[in-house]
Image (cartoon, rainbow, N blue to C red; front, side, top):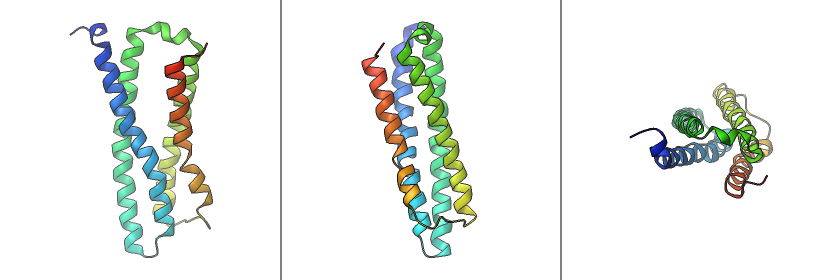
Length: 144
């Protein structure tokens, strides 16, 4: 199979691993809230383990999403000249920053440095939704 002839396969894989990545991005901040509100050391250890495992899975999803996206970009380099795609790439950078910030939260909670309340974490939990909706809208509508 030549690279270009498999474009739809690359796109399908890109979307499948994007779903994996976002599943983690949606659930991990919820784990942070549960972790912060947990009352025993055993629960906190369990949440740290769950967070680390989920982060590993979502990182694999992020890497494969990026790999398949780059393959599609190599096939169709003209995408770089579209404003909607440039905005999508900027949103992707923001998403990567969110991903890295999630790792930082894992380390903070692992060291039992809990915030006084979970208000910020509850807002943090909503950020991936904004990214997802915006990326999907720009990708499908393709405004100029």
